[in-house]
Amino acid sequence: MRKVKIILPILILFAGILLYLQFGRDVEVISTTSTTSDQFYEQGMTVVANKLIIPDKVAFAENLLDRTRRNDFKEVLFSYDVLGYPDRIKIKVYPNRICMKLCRGSWNIEYENGEMRL
Image 1 (cartoon, rainbow, N blue to C red):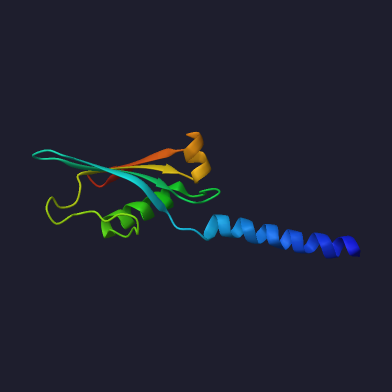
Image 2: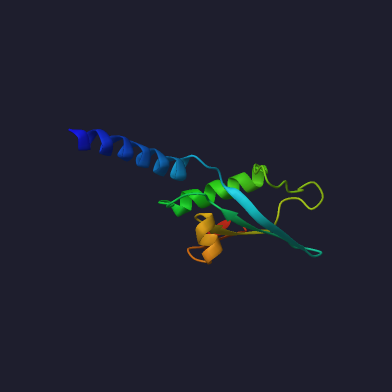
């Protein structure tokens, strides 16, 4: 009985930490780039998803592209008033900061002409 009193709070604490690490944090923009020419405008971003795992990358990518179009990131604001929306959007996604520091586990999203590629 004494072991149960010790193990149960530890398991609840561990589950709470895992839930926070998966669902408690928002996407963070690390860096952005913009490339423009006479007829072309490209926007690039590097983001940290702040998740342990991303089970549905397509839905996550669509959400990121939607947030990019709505200009809905707290770290950065894009200027769409002069050049309009970009012709191409490239996003490099890291699941968390540890993966970013180790340069592991990243994947790319490219959006051009209404078509998304992972």
